[in-house]
Length: 247
Ligand code: ADP
Image (tube, rainbow, N blue to C red; front, side, top):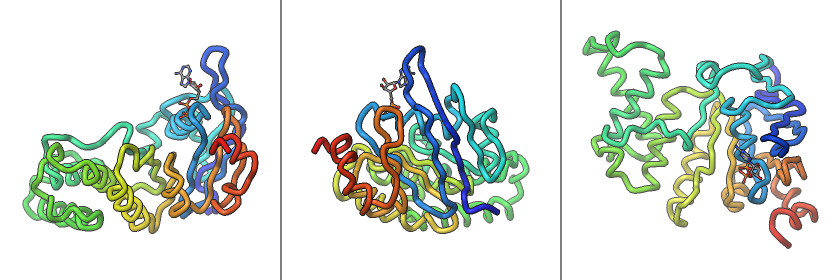
């Protein structure tokens, strides 16, 4: 299998006459954390929506594991192992943390609820769900309804439900948005814990988080790739400083 899990070639997205993403090439290495950053209006959200097939590109193509997914629907690519979280939350507010993760596991298995009516299977599923909660530090919140969880814990639950779908490629849209320092630290730590065995692409504003987590960073500006590389490189690039940091 190729080292490149996801590849966008000459991706362009126009809205009317306005080009939001302009001829972008992106190669995501298997097993890496790849961050997409850039100033407001750079095209990050549009790029994210293209990669997760919520937008159809005006031109260009996207390949996942050497399969062309340019014309696949979001549900199809989810079944192939690309799971997006946060913007369209998979968390049901009035279900408990445990129920939410159990539901995600069932969806991941693609098996109807009725199949799980046998007690043995249900308890197996519960054990797996508890393990997922434990992995994200939520075991003691298993019976708390999602709506009652503190904000940072809700994000942890979203990650647990995303993991329930067993993604090969996880796409995170601003995982630390709106968080205080403590929650940012907790989510950063959580992402570094769950990265094993998968690839993560994230759009993230917080440069501290990007510096800590990302192996590769793509900097977008005005819909185009301005720079790409590890944090140590792109953070010293004068063009990036000018466009992104306003220096
Ligand atoms: P970012 O996420 O980097 O802030 P976006 O991808 O949201 O940037 O937006 C890039 C540009 O594309 C912006 O100028 C925005 O106004 C424009 N844009 C985004 N979505 C639409 C849309 N649905 N229709 C028209 N213009 C859009």
